[in-house]
Length: 375
Image 1 (cartoon, rainbow, N blue to C red):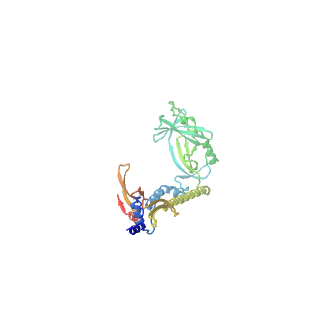
Image 2 (cartoon, rainbow, N blue to C red; image 1 turned 60 degrees about the horizontal axis):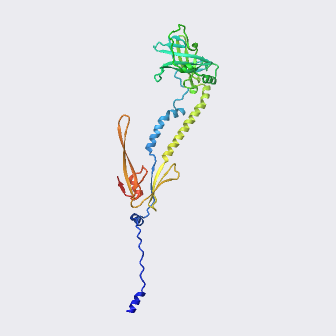
Image 3 (cartoon, rainbow, N blue to C red; image 1 turned 120 degrees about the vertical axis):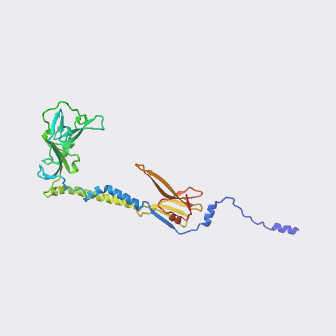
């Protein structure tokens, strides 16, 4: 018995392995055991569809086509067109003259005011003043937006003819130097006593004004004579007998037309570049394959991609497809409803991540390898 006891005492005790009581996530264990590498996959989509780009291009072209085509000289902008008559003026050159003339006028004056009665039955009340080589003519009108009622509409005029030993530079300087008198800002006062003596604005002489600006290519002439008045629009460029522009006017306008063409060409080149930039934008969704991870990236003009989002996937991840509906009511009260489809990736233990629009559900299922969870 002693030997038996010594035998058991000499036997070494078997080692018992330690047990780790730290809990392990079922998803983590399952992912490590189940996930196997698969080939790299990716899908891409345009950031802006061809339909939307074409719609924008069409709308912008409609808005800018008149200006662009006129700048290129395809439509409009023809200085050789004359819708009036050709007349020789003081410079002994042929100009295009268009306008109207009224006859059988009746004038009456009250103080500084002149009343002009036309055969058509309407009355014109005006006031004028000569200032150096120019002047001001004001027309009284009933301003419905003003508490004062009647007010003056004053216009600067030049008494020198731009066709008779006066350069356009001098004409411009004269007009710019005219300061409107104080009565232009006052309420018109109409004296009762009228003079029987005929008083003609600017003593019957013609004056010139530029309502469209000096660079418009024409000037306006205004003249009140004893029994008539005329308002004419006169071209600054001159013509040949056959109605074509004179060589002098062609040379003067060639620089402006060239600049207009260059500006139109540059505009359309810039416009085409902007359209190309927007059409080249793409969004990529790729699965790394060696890792259960999605990468969302973008690129412009075929440049290297820029990573936007990294989405790790696990066994608790799923692809969710949902729709949103919006209602719009126009100014006429008509309502319309639009529906759009969207996708995101949900996780059991993390917040969901939205995916870019423009991808089909079937393509997303294929590249992600996830199951579909509809909402």
